Image (tube, rainbow, N blue to C red):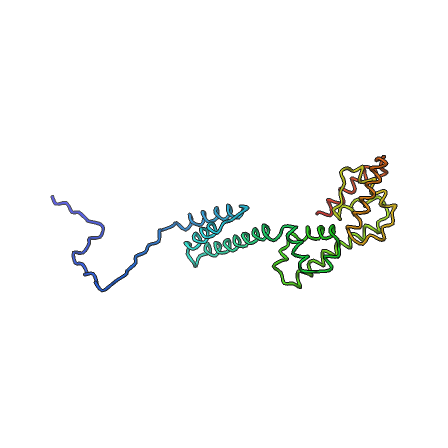
Length: 250
């Protein structure tokens, strides 16, 4: 009985080609095979980790870029990777701006050095109020005319708040006006007493936030000398104030 067997595979040819000895400086490279779906999942996890970090290094960005480049260039996964890479670069830039340029003291010095009179003339408290509202905006990288435009917008807002406070002639809502100007007190009782005295004063000469702070300091000194008595600001007035403050934030 004769058994038939079948050989599978490739049998190397016994005929070999001679090596061309004229070839020089040949470099052989190879790229490790990566499962596209596995690489895509790893890229997504890496992106989430980096984006949630408080600091992203150049090495981490380069590693992420290398991961993206290993995806097929004509695939949707590659396009998504490029999009995420751009977002990470933007995050790095934002972090750098926040650390270096966007500190309130640094931004205030920058604006003063620009010699913008409308900013210089609003006083120290006014400048602080304006800067705190500009600190999240990357205005230092904007053209000069845009810087002044954004700055004047906040200065106008400050003047509007001052004007509304000066025109306010009743207890209800008055604390809300002071809160908009970042004026707070240690207790509701002290706040109510200060507000009562302010409502009795002529505030027509208050042109800057610094002017208002000087008057409030004088009122506080009066209260400290005479002692705090019960305020006519009822508890419901403060409840309304806190509700108005919540509505403003929303």
